[in-house]
Length: 147
Ligand SMILES: [Zn+2]
Ligand SMILES: [Zn+2]
Image (cartoon, rainbow, N blue to C red):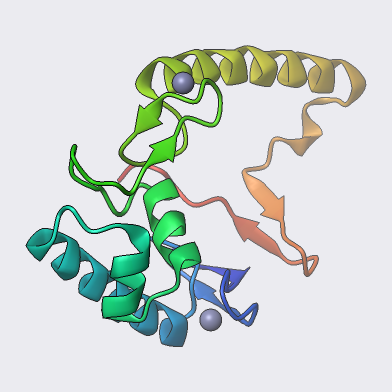
């Protein structure tokens, strides 16, 4: 199952299958850089972002993006700190601490339920075809989450 998506890095369109939304070329560069940073942090778990950047040539933006995407995790003692975007508590990866992600998930579920209920009121059930419309006006089948 694949769909047409914009590459998050170079904005080109490509056949998206799974994983991060990067095209083939960007994915390759990204993986090489990610591997470099991961290896460096394994050898030097106490390194800060500046040291990682100087030694791997990978931009701090990318490093923080990987942390937010939950791909890269730093050690407990690492000076590379991330803070929960909701309560500011120190976290090792992702965007929110465990407590906040739990309550956010709950809020989202409630919001989603309310949205669904209001949609059901305004439009009839004809939208429920299992097909979505993308930016190009093309219809595609929604990707199955579980297989
Ligand atoms: Zn790309
Ligand atoms: Zn939090």
